[in-house]
Amino acid sequence: MLLSPVEVIGYIASALVVASLAMTSVVRLRVVSLVGSLVFVTYGVLLPSIPIILTNAAVALLNVWFLRKEFSPNRDLGAVPIASDAPFLLDFLRSHDADIRTFHPGFQPPAAGDFALLLTRDGLPAGALIGTPEGDVLRLRVDYVMHAYRDSRIGTWLYRSGTKVFTDAGFASLATVPASEALRHYLLGVGFVRRDGELVLDLRP
Image 1 (cartoon, rainbow, N blue to C red):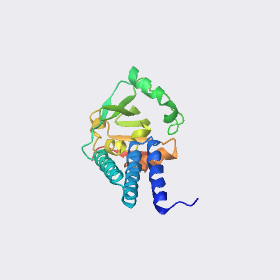
Image 2: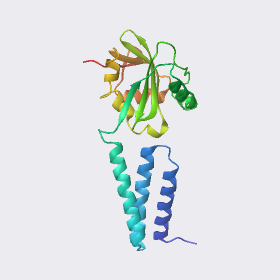
Image 3: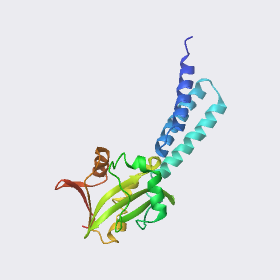
Image 4: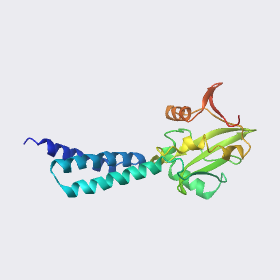
């Protein structure tokens, strides 16, 4: 049985809404849900059906509002120094061990003397950073953000306007040799530069 163009649009809208529910990234969920709701509005106009139009127009506006908040320069991102042997940090790293190893295949728990940060979003744990101090250079061993928040630009914030957390701890630069191509691409995207076989970010003018 052939579907009418209106039915095809309805099925596409339904598929987009279902797909949005399968997204683990908050930003991608909102974007796909926004597109789905807009397609549903089109479907409602073609029927026509006022309830479908009103409901999905409201959903679209909510998605726009949440996405605007997500990318707002005033969003609540943080980096809190934490002891490298703090039970909370160790539990967090252990629970995300498999995901961490996709970027850091040789991941090892923090060692005594390591510098550690708990990365937060809206006051909730979103990731962790671990590095080994060498004078005023911090050699990064782990830079990890949970999948749900990887589109929230936490790294962009941390390595730009959030670098005070490093300079306050006495570091003048960050350096690392990425253990994966995905990590290399990410660090180059947030401001690191290639230097002497590693990636480096200068923290002071």
